[in-house]
Image (tube, rainbow, N blue to C red; front, side, top):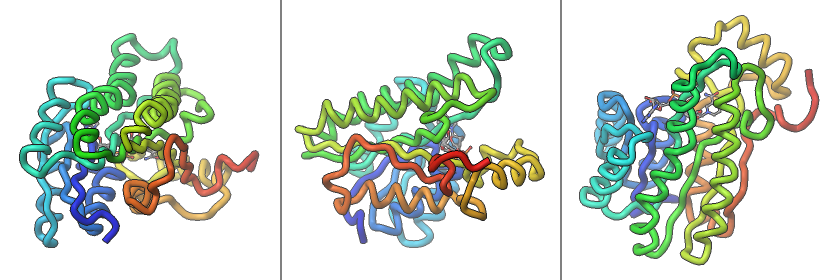
Length: 251
Ligand SMILES: NC(=O)c1ccc[n+]([C@@H]2O[C@H](COP(=O)([O-])OP(=O)(O)OC[C@H]3O[C@@H](n4cnc5c(N)ncnc54)[C@H](O)[C@@H]3O)[C@@H](O)[C@H]2O)c1
């Protein structure tokens, strides 16, 4: 068990990559705080973990709100213990060029996808440092490495997540804090439900060299490894899991 006796917070833990990571972390022995804006989704994941003999609590929290984030971290510390692992994974992925989206839509994307990492790290780091160290993982995305057409706010937010991960890694390395970013390609989760299957297949055929779909479990496996002591000397890095999309031109 790679994460025995660890306490993990997973934001966006109620669905997709976050839910798969909650299950993976619990299987590896961690107690998991499943945090999600929609509490019912977090509760379902926490119940499932408990039914399999694991330890989990569900927390309703909007990661764009500092008060919610503070409560999320405090509840985790008082009910499970100080967090050793914080997986900032909650996110939205709105489409639109600058001239198509409103200022409010821009702000919502930047707040949920980027500011949340700042807020969560700010709330959790003092406890993690006091406990002797820990791991922060952030879900960025390949669009944070190379921007995507019609995804202005999202591409900017995820690029910010990549460099914020590096900043945290540099600033807190001597406190025994590691921080890495995970960049998934196209993952089969509810986030992509709006993408019609024909368009999805055409996209994968054109841009993803490896055949098949990346599953949330594939990302969860990587997160569990990076969260574990097996990755003890890995920090400030960007891990791409994209079926080869970023290797070079394929289309
Ligand atoms: N699915 C992909 O292809 C893909 C690719 C690259 C990156 N990502 C990133 O992976 C992360 C997880 O996405 P997913 O694909 O599992 O999507 P998902 O929609 O299945 O899960 C996202 C979860 O985040 C929660 N959430 C949204 N806003 C929130 C908020 N303000 N506060 C708390 N929780 C909130 C949602 O309720 C949902 O449960 C996101 O950051 C996303 O940008 C996804």
